[in-house]
Length: 253
Image: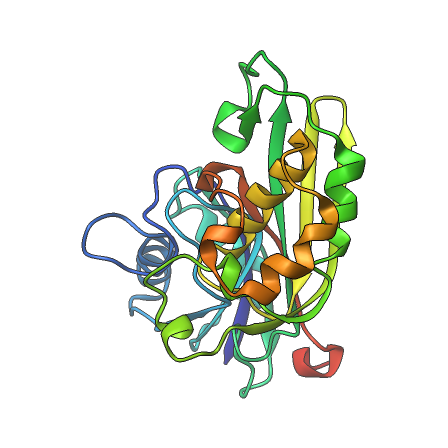
């Protein structure tokens, strides 16, 4: 049986989703829970990598297992074996060919910016604070320039194997900046992402919000294919995977 899980997790103390030797990963934590419940350690397929410190509101992974536990009761059963920082929200059976990463149509990320000279005592671990006033309208104007199919090499950190292969063209279908009080959110939907792409994109939009970058300069930044042309890479703690979208037919009945 191929089972799809929807997860939420606080990435603060994880080394990312993927299993690594230098720390505790979300994947390892979930596999530990699956092994405790099923008595075997299933191989899991995640919808993508999230780096150390990045959070997820809805992360998708699938695995194969034979179980007598009704699928709809798996979240409750698995959550008993998971730390409070990882929750299974939903489980469902999917077709055998379904793959959490390769079956995905788009993924949406949100970057949260606290635009205030005073830090929040409640959510400092879940946003990046910018004390200087930000013009959210200028940021949104710049964000719109990223929409479309482009070469995003300028928004890719060094050391990316994908970039070394020249595979840097992606399609952003939506990119929006909104403000609610001191909270400024950058929401991006794309068919794929490069290494640190959203964090660099958000850093570039902050430059536009500070008045240090003309929103109309974005096309030239992309055309230049040079990381130094874009803004800074913002910290991981402000980044959330918001949702993963699949074609309805790919999820089965």
